[in-house]
Figure 1: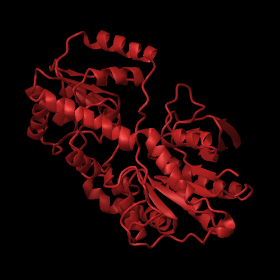
Figure 2 (figure 1 turned 90 degrees about the horizontal axis):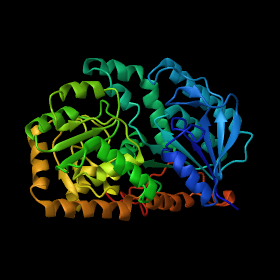
Figure 3 (figure 1 turned 135 degrees about the horizontal axis):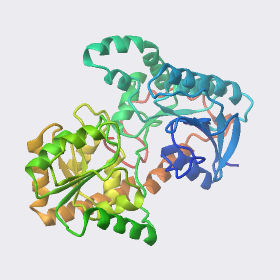
Length: 435
């Protein structure tokens, strides 16, 4: 009999959308379905990114061998809005109503940042003796406080008192805490007021190790040559959403002092126009816009370094960007603290620098540029680390083995209280140290 799992995730792109690039649970629900699990992905009819409804009623659609259970949602016009709060609360309420009529699963995964939905999952799990794992993907509700001006943050925290209490309830009562990094797991453990135990698990983002088709590779090469010509200067690439988490000002200031190095800053986002204006007059800084898989592969092939230039106050410590550079076999220059910094120091596949420091960034770039053998060695180590620990294939399989430990026959299952063990490790995680 198949292991039965429910996943509650309402913010990711959905398979019904055209030209969609699936994210964490879009990919993982499909993976588990192919592995023989009975998967139900509970989500909203309202798609977060395009801000539109994909279906107009509660219904079930198939995603490979996994089921998608749509709940007709209220929708919202803006990411930060009262309408979104009402939308999430409505989903949590409808989930609790609808779930009573379903055969109960062996396991539920309820990701954060949708804290009230995770709370509903924990409530259902407690009632029906079903293990519930929360998956910390964003540091909510603290991130909501951090977007406010510093003088307004105490008031913001006060206004979010209920969200903080709900997050404490989720983390205390969940069977276990997963996270995209060890630092994110620790964030949940602070709310749970306990140390890490055997039910807690590192579930990093990862990146696929599979190569693109020859046709796609050729498309990428044609794009690169058309965009950049045939010159091959030392090239540093950044690929991502150009928003408030990235410190491209320091990168542009470094480019101004390194005119013979090409900086390709690919992506779109809320801060793109600001950074373009900063780079006016620099002929070594390029903004090619949003690029897809074939273009990304071509850019990384012709680059010498992948750049992770996060702001000083960025909370993530093991985001998806480094894994993409690993897949491209690139050394990584990073300003992040925590897990990625520790990994770079331990494994030697890049160089760390302090956020906001132009001098340190230049020193990091010149260290690699002046030593081609070091650059090649770092690139090999980068790709090897992906293959050993962080390919999507390895991450998904290791996580599946962890999930299986919760799928016991119901007559053998304990009440699954929140773990209180004092052990600091996690079982057979893809990575045994920091997030």
